[in-house]
Image (cartoon, rainbow, N blue to C red; front, side):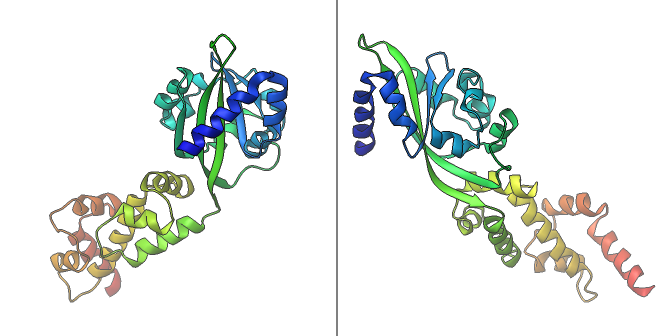
Length: 259
């Protein structure tokens, strides 16, 4: 934290000339965006355009207002953090998911659509003029992790399929993807269209179906073999998935087999 604050102070000292300061930030290796006190973007650097897949920075500056962005303020849950920055506080928040899909829907993409998910560390700090009046808010976005394709999701799916007998444990499953449970859940839903728990539940019900097809097992024994409470929520989950009770499913399978 101390190093971050020291770096921020150096940034502030460099703001003696707006033109020189912006030229410096344009060469900065991390994504940087500067906002007027009303929330309107007044500057985005080259790295920011590259990270955001923005073809023309003029589509952002003067047009985008972070305070009116429901994705940043509400979907990503950053309202409190952003408002603190615009109240003149220095804020640092880790593991913010970059909403590329929102950026590309708003601006003309520089190249083909992103197939990545990135998490960034965001540092926001105020810039004051010589009279100590709040003038700008600077946001620096440092990429911490980048995930391409489905390899992280595949690892999690394989883990759930292998450990289907155990109780659902989001923390353990997220660990296989090297993500926090919160960000793993968001990424999994984005890539598969379902929550991790729903995927696990489908695997569990699939195993239950297999056990119900065993003529040597009763319905209650099939539930026990799958580590499922016969009177628990999976009874309703099974009905929703198959349109019938486990007993009806078992009878129907035997009828089909005899034919």
